[in-house]
Image 1 (cartoon, rainbow, N blue to C red):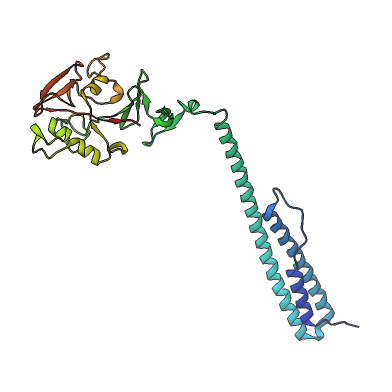
Image 2: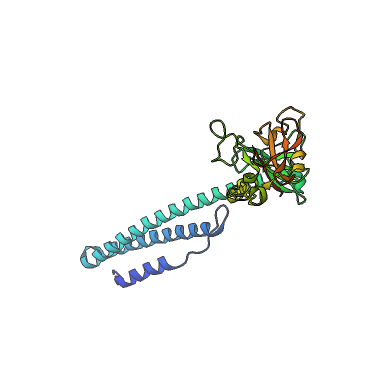
Amino acid sequence: MIVRRPLWSVIALALVVILTPSAPQAQGRGGGPIAALQNQVQALEQQVADLTAALSALGTEVGAGDAALQTQIDAANAALVGLQQLFASLNTAVNDASGDILSLKDRVLALETELAALGDGLTSYDQLADLPCTTASETAGTVNLVGLLKTPTCAEGTSANGRFIDFGLVVLDTQTNLIWEKKITAVGSGQNLADLHDVDNTYTWCVATGNSTGFCAGNATSWIGQVNAEVFAGFSNWRVATRDELLGIVDCSAGAPCIDPIFGPTQAALYWSSTEVGFSNAWLVNFFNGLASTGFKSFEFPVRAVRAGP
């Protein structure tokens, strides 16, 4: 006797099989949610395969005598084939994701190992000194410890005597803790007043300092004011150096110009200081012979900016 199951019971069985959570399986390498999802997908694939076999057996029992029921069974089989393909794609995607995650995990572990090796043995800022680094201008440099707090900074170089540190646009004097403007050689020869830091530029004392009182009454131009307005090297508290500050960086040991080469382009000439002598005169420092002298404020000479560091 042939026992014919109603089609609704077959569909109910399919839903029960598909929606029933699969039993926990052994997880793959690393475990975790991805491995658990893999196991669930594989279990669902097996359940769909079992249901397909059951429907096939039911179709054999029904035979050709019940064409309408057979049509419904065939449709259910076709739907199950679609489910099998869907689960196969999902299983492939889960396997790919698992491989990517494991690869990323390996890379993270390798990076952690490299970082641990890089920091191995570093217990104070002192040990950072002279380590290689890359400056903000993308040039090779070394770590220098600046100030009482020993702040690590990446510098392009240090003077031969170790006193001066080159930070690209400026030079730090570790002896006086002053930061000095570095001059540049602008395109072409002679003055280039459009570039405030051109080594060939010269100014009257009134223009250089921005003074507009006394002898400088009526002056409306300020070189140092423009330097601060552009926030040169990130600072806006630049000033014209005093006579004694300029004398402090005079060094004629290598000939003219009498200054350490780390300062870059420098005229072997008189430079204005901010120190006044009287109504119409101010002090100058000569970077040709290292001596100080006075000059009329109306004369034009080069000038160098300075600020208290860091």
